[in-house]
Image (cartoon, rainbow, N blue to C red; front, side, top):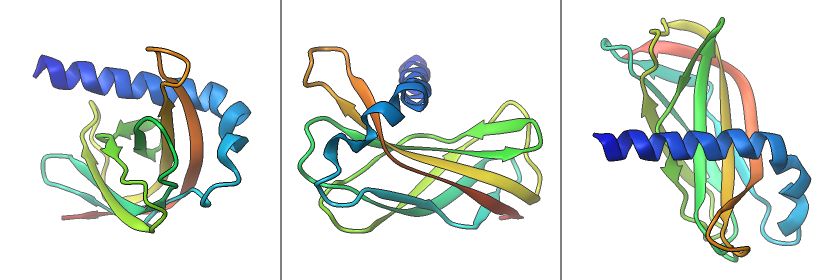
Length: 145
């Protein structure tokens, strides 16, 4: 349990850092396969408040270091960060699915979605440099599952 929380904290910290410094480095691999991430327009809310989002992504296999998909659902001032997904980068379009539960419960209805395709580059040493490869935001309808 502690390891999961620690991993979630590290992942969240990397996403936050990438949102600040990522745009500066996002074009570093522009000559590779076009990196994309999308979020489907319909998400699910379970009876316990867990949110599930799905979407698609594509990234190049010519990267050193992991590529992660971070996502969240936003309704009013409430944000629910979902569990991170490790991407398989082979140039093919693939689907992703993430689930998470925030401290405040989101309700079925209108919301917003955000997803980020994030590369953790270890080429400069032991500390990863996060680079945003692609991001997507949009309208979302949360449906009871």
